[in-house]
Image (cartoon, rainbow, N blue to C red):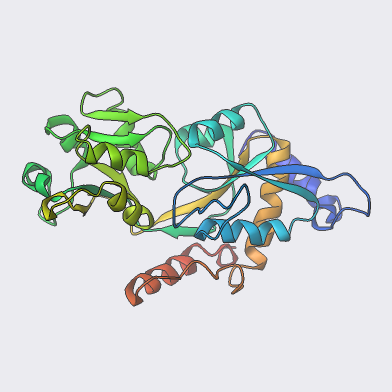
Length: 299
């Protein structure tokens, strides 16, 4: 946490729970602008309002539990979010992973859910060129693929894939085998279209966005179908957080969010979108991960 965070947090607690109470009738409320992206099924924008995506529905629930704020929604991109956080604008963003750059300018809530680790996605016709960079378990040795391979990786600027992948990508910043697409409101479709046009060979994506990537990269022929390959050395899941600027305002809203997460962790209304569409194995993995990250289980 930032210097002085503990002092601020104690002040908030000693304030007699004032942060827990709605504003008095007629009192002016602080504006909190929630950022969303175009990335089904995690985010499904709905005319400048929170949509029906997995992250969206969690955010809508939290908004309703935070009446002391006036909530607004901003359709955004990662680069814009990062710049706004640097400028200490009063924004909140759900669905973020931790990395060193973000932790320097953002405060992170308790993780509110998890996702399966990201995978490499590439057209089936390129599997033979990827095989030399797979380990015995069929996992992609990512650093080796970038450094020694002939395939070009396409990414969207500012995205995070969890610390282990981010660290590898940072090591190869500027490498000729990586093409960075300018940040946009859609986080995945643009890169998939680059694959379809042959401008890049493969990308990295989370399980939830693989359908979007496949649809956007779709061109006739089974050999052009995107296949997903695991990446070597990744954990079973990646925690997902809610973030705010690294300042006193951000600490206030993240403190409130953490209280709500603990109180409503297993609330069916809060979790209603999380398990939709999952098969039995995926559901079990999600439920196991939620038990492991449940903040109520930590002393």
